[in-house]
Length: 196
Image (cartoon, rainbow, N blue to C red; front, side, top):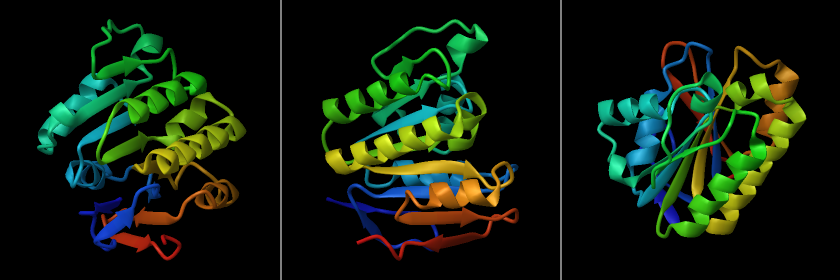
């Protein structure tokens, strides 16, 4: 299955199974890229949020005019912060950003239980690494990428350049076929040379 992309300086389409690493500065404005990715050529999407609550994700989707009826949201923060929460058909919760088994279970359930063109936004690897050690996070990202391939879906994974050292960034880069690199001024550089 081919997926159209509406992100600047990227190919017109990418095949199902592609994971894209979004490298950004610590203060980088990623919402524009994230929402352009989610709202194009999509039947359902899942936002795995280790950075903001489900309520904040919904506000972002609304602000950027993304069709919320297509959205599932995995909120990893509200329980740990003691906020009230109610599971609904499209909002899911795990106990904390380091509940990697829970995150993987929700992701697998989403991909197994939906049809058509599915996208995942993983926001963010960096926040998850604050809570869980890097090796566990690396393994979890690898498993999500395997799920994308298995279910012919695509994903965008956020990683902050300002937080990780060069060696850590290179290690995560090695997992991905495609990279979107956002600089402080909002310029976008990309590398999709490994995408088949």
